[in-house]
Structures are given as C-alpha cells and as structure tokens.
Image (cartoon, rainbow, N blue to C red; front, top):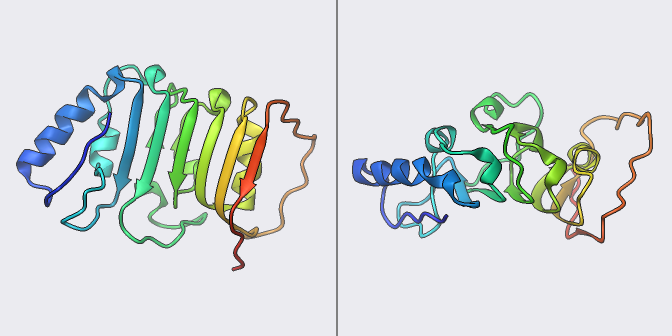
Amino acid sequence: MQMTSHFKPKRLQNGLLALGVYYSLHRSSLERAGLIGGPSTSTTPFLTPYHIFRLHGNPRMLKNLRIITLADLPPLVNGDENQGLLSLSLPDARPTSVEVDSLMLSSIGINWEHVTSVNLGDLQVEECLRLIHHAPQLCDCHIDKLSPCSEDVPVLAEHIVQGYLQSLEIEESRSS
C-alpha cells in the first residue's frame, strides 16, 4: 500500500488517507508512513500520527513496514518529550522487513522475532544491540548514521548469537 500527498493536507485528503488506512492492513505492506508532515508540494507519501494510530485490520498481515520522517527532525533520544508522540504500537504485527529513519526502535511496538531485513537511519549503539537481541532471524542489516553510546553500554549477561545474519553494513558513524 502506498499513499502519496501532492497537495496540502485538506479534509478530502485526510478522508482519503483515513479510508486507505482503514484498509491498510488487509494488504501485506504499509510503506512510507511519513511522520510529522512535510512540504506542501511533497510527492512523498504522507501519514500523520493520527492516521497511523487508526490502522485497522489484522496486524499479522503486515510484512513490510517503512517509516520515514518528512520533516527535518533532530535525532530522538531517551527522555525526549516528543518521544511519546512518535510511537507506533502494533504488538501483533510481525513484519519481515522494517525500514525506519530518525526514530528510536523502542518507540516501534512490533514483534521483532520475524524480522529478517532492516534498513535503519540515525540509530544509537544501544538500540543496535537491542535490535540484534530481539530479532533472532535477522539476515540483512543496513545502518546509516550510527551514533555512539549516550551512556556506558550495559554488560550483556549472555552472548547474542545471530545464526542467520549474512550482511551487516554500517554506512556512516558520527560522533556526538
């Protein structure tokens, strides 16, 4: 499912988006769910947090989840007052492919056990370790803009074994 905004959000567009979101999970893919808005002439698909929270259908059918931000947002960190506004809770969703940019993975409430492919932007080291721990079937992992730890990384009580991981790419590291 792909929705595109070529004009400023109006009542008609919001109604069409709401209708599309209503049927969204009757398909296997929700793509390009833009959070927070974008330029009025944007051709990038656009969903507001309001629309994302109103997803209908069986979340288990969701196979591909792609969430991008349309506005230039600073990377979100733990304790950010906006973090609660930018969260998605679909605990029954079991996507196999996830693409997320500029959001903390902890704000995305999905079942990570079936994820085999991720493409992530603006990720902190702690979240990368959490992802590897919670996605045991992960095969392909691409990370763009890996941030250093905000604090000391806690010592893991056990080793994390990733038996399926075939590709781990880190495009760019940045310092704080």
